Amino acid sequence: MGASGCQNDQAVSSAELRALGPQRVFSGRNLAQVAFPLGGIGTGSVSLAGTGALVDWEIFNRPNIGAVMPYSFFTLWAQAEGKPPVTKVVQSPTLPPFSGQGEVNFRGVGFGVSRENGAGLPHFQSATFHGEVPLAWIDFADAQMPVEARLEAYNPFIPLNDRDSGLPVASFHLHLRNPGDETVRVSLAANLYNAVGYPGEGPFSGSTLGLATNTFVDRGGIRGLYMTSDRYPADDPKFGSLALSTPWEDVDHQTCWFRGGWYDALHKFWDEFSVTGTLQERTYETPSPDGQGDVGSIVLK
Image 1: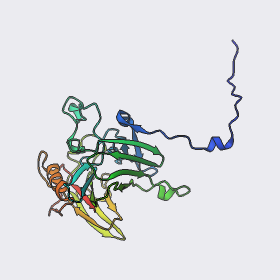
Image 2: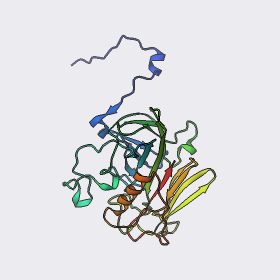
Image 3: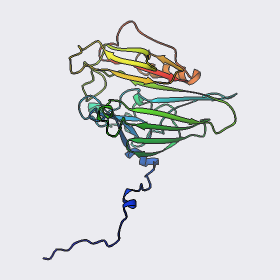
């Protein structure tokens, strides 16, 4: 048998090789196939889904595709002058399948999408995603929302600076534009679950969690929540910390969401923020109960 080669007589210039081609834009059901990793070199990552959800929380020293950290999402509140406020989770609607992502024996057996990612709350009507590593952008559209919103997310990728490129951070900017004539008041709530002690797989509950502590810090031009746990000594592999922070100056905070059963915590958060556009401070004298973390929020106004 003879061998044949593949020839292409069409020359490609150096400029063509280096030119940027058209970038893919994802929308509709195609958003379900997007997961854009955010994190420093060697630090693990959390992924930005095409809808705007934060998924695949792999920051606990092992792979964990599909992990969704409870109640960790952004919520936008906007009120045009003389009109009632509009509040939306900064995501487009949850996409099929709707069988849910339950844990262990309950995975995908018809219990529906999980409340822990805000799936039952109002979302933006649609979104389009495009990414160019290390940056990603999601443009949201909603006829009810009086402002236009674009979420920008990026990694700490700094050419020739491996040290700072290895910072364990994910950065987000929310760009807002008022297309109308009336004044619009806006505020953004960023929520994060304190999962210090999580073993890196399975549900975000159980014997390794609990005794979580959240503290509000305002230092060096940065303000936000510092999260850790009293359960483990500093030399324990499960010990660690999380931070939810911003350089934005006008910030309210709620160090801990309400500690209750069933849907109480999410219900109270939504009832307060959707009406007022802010959150009153709440702290507890003791760390979180055994087997549970605490959710905390900062509100940028």
